[in-house]
Length: 230
Image: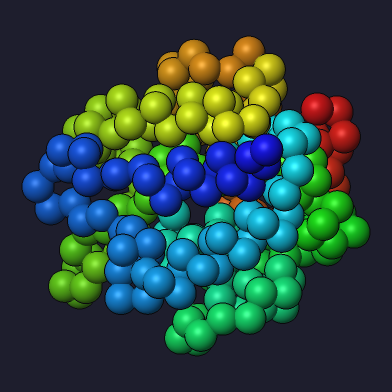
C-alpha cells in the first residue's frame, strides 16, 4: 500500500514548474534538475521515507517559495545543507554553503519540538509554490525573488500553485486548517485561492531572524502553540 511518503514523492518529482509562463527577467530555481539534481533527489527521497512513511494526515505549514540557500539548494523546506546533515541526519555530498537565515529558525523550532521525528509526525512543511524564482540584482548576480513581488509572476503561477496545493491534500495533507508563513502577501494570496477551510498566519522565519532574533524563543513558542491548537 502506498504511504504518504510515496504519494508526496510522486507529486514532487513529477511536478513540472516550467509549465508556468514566467515573465521576462524571472528565472526558475529547480534543485531537482540542477547541477546537483541527482543528489537532491536522493536527499528528498530519504527525507520523505524517513519521516512520512505512514498514512497519518499532516497539517500543512506553507512558506512562500524556496530560496537559493535553503530549499532551492537542498529540496527540503527551510533546511540548508548543514542542517540536512545535523538536524535531519541525512548524509549528503552537496557543496557547503553559507547558513540560511530561515533554516536557523527552523533548526531551533524542530529541536524545541523534540526533534524531527516528533515534529514531522504532525506537520508537512513546504511552500505555496514548490520551486523558487530569481532575478538579476543590482550587482548583476542572481538574487531571490518572492512570487508576490511581481504581480505578473503571482498571476502566472496561480493555476499551478492551486494544482500543487490540491495535490498535497490529495496525497494526504489536511484541508481543514493550514499554517501560513507570513502575515502579509503570502497570507492574502493563500486566502484568495480558497483551498483551506481555515488558515492561521505566523511570522515568517526570515522576518523573525532579521528583525526579532532576540525574541526567537517567543516565536518558536508561537509556532508550537499553533501546532498544538491545530
